[in-house]
Image 1 (cartoon, rainbow, N blue to C red):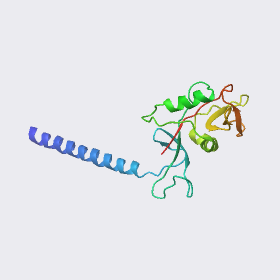
Image 2 (cartoon, one colour; image 1 turned 135 degrees about the horizontal axis):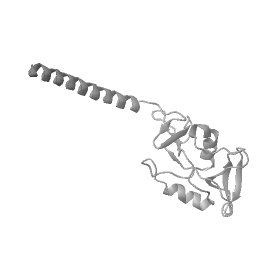
Image 3 (cartoon, rainbow, N blue to C red; image 1 turned 90 degrees about the vertical axis):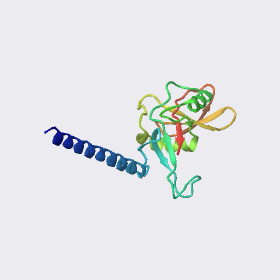
Image 4 (cartoon, one colour; image 1 turned 120 degrees about the vertical axis):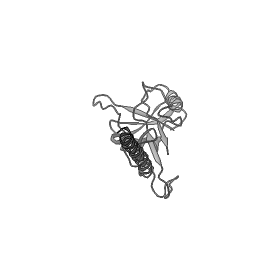
Length: 167
């Protein structure tokens, strides 16, 4: 009586192991074959832009683009501190975060709802820094209330910072 019971347990265990290994393999194949899309969680953040044909870095064989952190860095910063804070960021297993340039910030603004984490406040203008300078005294940023690009004094103005990385 004990022997048939042990055989049955052994069969059930083997079948369970078989299912576990085949399902794990299928999940790995499926996740590796998923095409990145705007708004998807990917490599430490959310995809906010995918490179298009003709753009620098575009590769028809492999998708490349911009990933934004899902939250602003805590606090407000002058421009040099915003640059440094983004470069110091180590999050979700990645340490190659940086402050977006003016073109990347424009793409982030256009896809801000896909990135998420932006505080909406109709009374207060949210100004985000870019890494692009206008000249020695002014840097560029963008109002996330109006969408307009602004050139502001990089030492006396404070703003928010949202780190990005490329893939």
